[in-house]
Image (cartoon, one colour):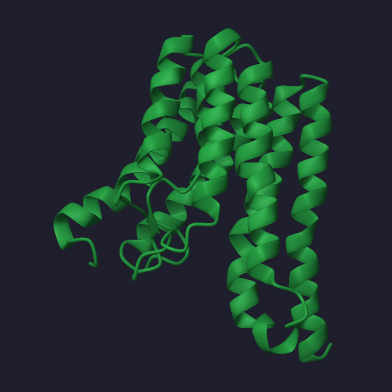
Length: 231
């Protein structure tokens, strides 16, 4: 396989995320939330590996006819934002007026964030909460908190998208990557088990999900406090 074929294969891998998004949406329409999140986690896994592969096979040079960044953002909006927001409302975790507020805030704010040219920092972290609503809403399914707690979390993180607070990219942020990457992989495993167990996870899975989620949420801000905004 030549360099062009390898680069195109990476684009094709990225594009499978759109298929997984459709499969997740079909499960969401059926209110099979467990299988919806299983497909979203599959899409999340593809999103975690296609970037390193794209850089390794130099897709910008060998397959420049496709914009991998744009393709990735389109799929991320579906799998990170649109489908999870629908699930938050349709599941009843947040319905009525609070659900309407949540889906409007999540979809509108994330659309602006995803096209913000300032979303990446010098160390390849994110500036502001990177719209990973799929991760938050999966945790909410596992916790089943009251609607007002969901509303508080959604509001705080929606505002945080536009604040100069760092959030790590587990693959691309060099600092603490030896910890961050295993944490992200562990989160994927725990999340998969939680969804597979219909959001009634074993205690070890529950606490694994909580600990890894807390790390991924807070690590960038801690780095910022310890090393400054450019550290």
